[in-house]
Every structure is written in C-alpha cells, then in structure tokens.
Image (cartoon, rainbow, N blue to C red; front, side, top):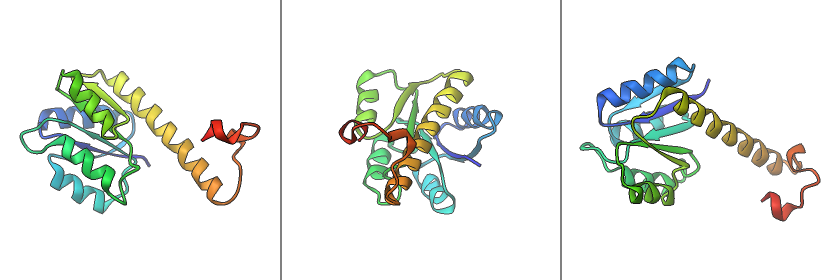
Length: 150
C-alpha cells in the first residue's frame, strides 16, 4: 500500500489533505512539524511527502534542504502544498528539490491527480534503476539511444 507523509503545522489543513488522500485509498501519516515528520520517516517507508513551506512550527525550506542532503531521503519525492502566494517561494522550493509546488487551497481531484502522476513517475524510475542495477535494459529503453534516455 502506498504511504504518504503529510507535514503541515495547521491542523485543519493537515486533516483536509489527509482526508482527500485517504478518500483516494492512500495511507496517510500526518505530522505537525519536522520532529514528528522525522519520527514518521524512521518508523515507516513513505512513498511521497507533502509539506507546507511556511509554518509557525517549522521552516519548510530548511526541511527540504535537510531531506535532499540526507542519505536515506534524498530521492523521496516531495510535493509542496503551500499557502504562500509568492512565486519566489515556489521557485525556491523547486530549486531545493520539490517535484511540484501547489498553492492552497487545492481541489481534491487536482491533488489526487498530481499525486497519482508523481507516484507513477517514481514507480517507473525505480523499475528502471532496478533493471539497470541487474544489467537489464528495460523495455521502456529498448531502441532509445542511451544519451537521450538518461
């Protein structure tokens, strides 16, 4: 089962995001701050992380930076779901390694659609990496010049 870690200092926003994802049959682990998020990450395997950038409880930019510097979580896909309307915050989040930055409020179908696509892309990347580590060229890459596929 796919598990998504949702980190947001705002309890209402966190529960709303959790509800949207659970309705789409995802397992959701909620966290109100970076400390709880780290505890959740140590306790279970997360397939995706959704976080707020600006919170009274934590600095989302520092959290992203720490994730990308981590040996264990540097490849964990992160979607930023933020109340910040500043384009520079969105750009900065993407520069720090978020795969996508969405402004709140977000509609349930949009969030679930984005999550589905990010998780599908992650599955393909993991499959390709696994096949390459075993010396197999995945069907996906057959006939494609290696310089383009990589």
